[in-house]
Image: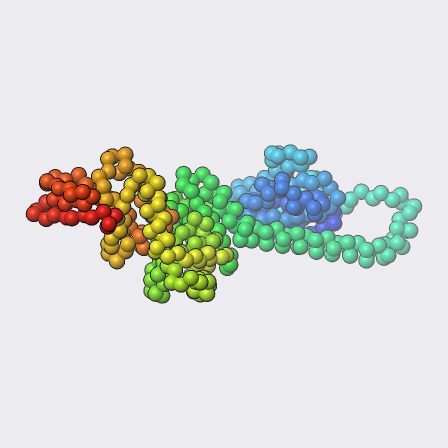
Length: 392
């Protein structure tokens, strides 16, 4: 069973102060306050169970006391070294560490006579002791104020360090570091309540991230699968009676929602939709709501296909406008049309305009007749289709 120990400072501005050493690692940083904010301390302080700062004019140094089941060990890092160096730590004896004088004992023991009687060397000669004693009452208030100021600086610096570690922006960076070894990609953001959200594209990526967060002790991270979150937002818009074309979560902090235009000026309607969505998208700093008409989408789709040498005719399918190729397409053209359809769906969705690829090979198994620019096609089972040039 690990024992609790006590550490007593015997020099410096905190002379006489005792610290409780719990089982595990306790790190002490010694030096000017400004070194708390230097980057090289992050690796020293980040993973310690307990961290204390001892102010002083010493060169920056750190020492670590490790309380294990059977022993107490001491390691020191000073003079710019990046590695810990072991140092002997006899219990209940005066030791010198990183420019300080201190002692360590088990909690249930008392301090030895050597520790209690320890004094720093006297610099003034014996003849001047009487003068020093007379001057002591004048210096005592100054020493007290300096000590209080140092303690205030310690509290402020420690408070800022703790606050910085808990800031949402810092937590986002920390989770990004946790996920850095993942084979998947994530978008990590925070909401206005400080909660951390991670977006990925697959269930495998979400599962990997959740396990990584649990191993890092991050039990409050929230994971989303992008297409499921889009479906959730779409369900809400449907229930609110808002016709929309597509929802994009390329950048989760700025979701894009494209609604169906109903008038030339939809600015007020877009504003209302953004305000309605805001409570349901806590991770969004801004919601980009745009409007587009079906005619514009049809024009975009036809122009894109026409640029690939594919002519189309309009129709309706399940209440949506559909575009279908009206001529036979070879394999290269079919591949080009399929790729463009995927690109169009990615950008504009398939709720308002549907691109339908028609395999004319199947239609031409029977006999077909052509009269000038019009065609009479056998589509099997005794059925025929008459296509006029005006419907293209």
